[in-house]
Length: 460
Image 1 (cartoon, one colour):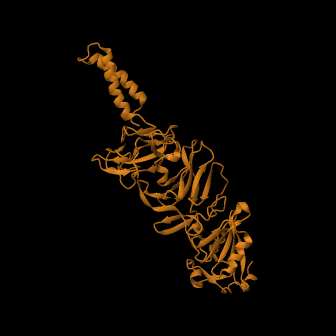
Image 2: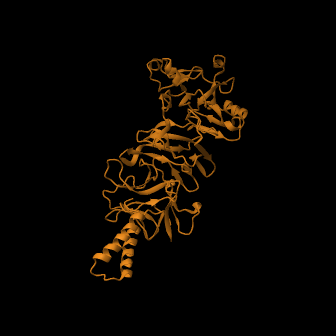
Image 3: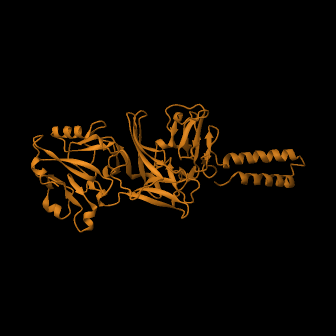
């Protein structure tokens, strides 16, 4: 903010004094002096004051005005990141001393100077224009809005609604449907099948460039839905399937009471969100330009963002580092052994490569399955379950039904329970090689891997 109401009031008194004492055109008519000053200050307030919302007759101009949420938690305006001279329209925390941008409108269309203006056009579409009136960004509404209002909410969501309708379900556009690199409380990543929305996080290109970066966090719907981290088209990390309480591939060192992650699967919505338990705590998830997923919390005492969790965090977090039917165990490396090993009933595909640490080709069966004639299962506990892109799931099948289904299907390679809250009820089946498995000392799940009858006695 370059100016505020107090500054404007001060200017009113100064205006009155100067015009009364100095102007040869005003000869004592105090009413005229006050009127002229009020007109001047009204214009100043209109362009300078921080607003909670704007309507069709107001604008946000670079260097002169911003929008604040009602509680003063977030602010929307123009900014330049670090040493960059390019201008962007974004949202940041208002009360946090370190400028922390959580959303950017014109990520891939920066302004070259401070001529930017945000306003409503004649159809009720919110647009960002430059000095030539060229549109750099817009809300792209499919229908016109008669009396539009753009409002910044205290949860960081920037919404467009009809002036006389404050119901959130009736908003016509919201920034939460178009995330950048930050996940805030109440914001969802995933699919809204009813609205045709696909929400994902995408990193900045660098700390000085908020344009679309290399990394993306998205929700994949192939097989059992799972959250994936991509670098371009290359899969980097999986959160692991949701077990009813948490993502089984993201391990927390200590329990946290400030936030929770929720996962939703229903016919219309498949998504996850961050829910803050303590309203006074500023917590967010950020995808960095280097591809790190960080859970951060603002600490007032030290005036810094504390990193609570980072993923990927070790070699076993890298996608399928041990290849098909390989199992990664980070504690093995602490004792001087390779992090990768084959599942029971399997052996390295290429022994010589395996010995020199080339594990990506994975493992193969020692003995082929007989397809139902004596085949069985080896139980593994405390695992990050395999990649679910080639899986099938059912929420109501029991453990025995799941086992029987897999045993009878010649293509089934493993099965697992779906929801730990209900004693493992629900069924997940895999029909191809098992990828991206790792051992956990805690918080892991049970996996039942199909092996030939001759291998059952050897497995422990």
